[in-house]
Amino acid sequence: MRPVNRGDVPKNKDGTNKVYTRYGQAKDDLKNVLGTYCSYCEMGIENQVDIEHVIPKNHAPSLENDWNNFLLACKSCNIIKSDKNTSRIGYVFPDIENTSFLYEYSINDVKVKDNLESTIKELAIKTFDLVKLNRKVDNSNMTDDRKLARNNSWNKAQEALKDFLELLPLISNDEQKQNLINLTANTCNGFFSMWIQIFKDYPEVKKAILENVNGTAIQCYDENFNPKEDLTR
Image (cartoon, rainbow, N blue to C red; front, side):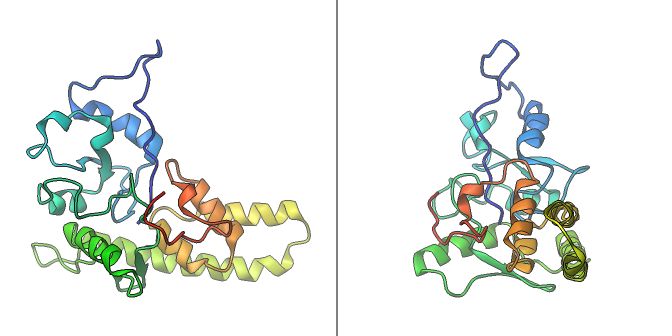
């Protein structure tokens, strides 16, 4: 789960903090700072962006229009999460914790990593279950949109890795290498944690993937752009 930096409250032209009287007014600002990706499953959601309240509106009415309570989510994650959590306690959220190292991916599954420390694993499981991150079918018994998109992205990432490895020996200078790195990174359009996993041996590509997307909390990755295994930032 990509950790994100939402940043401070956006400013008006006169330098004052924006005040949202309706939370929908924050959508463009959130898209600018976070990119159009679900904060939970990481799926690209350019045309179906929901503002997600970390603490649900009915549990914290005073935070309904609070910038620091907003994330972006796909419709599946937003509907599934709904108002199930009454607070942040007992979960991990990608805007304040380092969620980069909690889950592992394959073409068929997302799962909580087995080797996590027990208290961290419990939090990771609670968040995983909160949005049913590995749901296979939806309420209509149709394949979950997130699973379909994740499978497509997995195949796309594997093909991008194959192309990268085929072209890399043909590179003759640093400029060409950087162009190849950028081209490869630009192929990624969501599911960043999965791409970081697939390109685990190529830090330059991982760096480009992470830096290509607004809002990624780069401080949650080490010098080789592997996830730091520490929940605190």
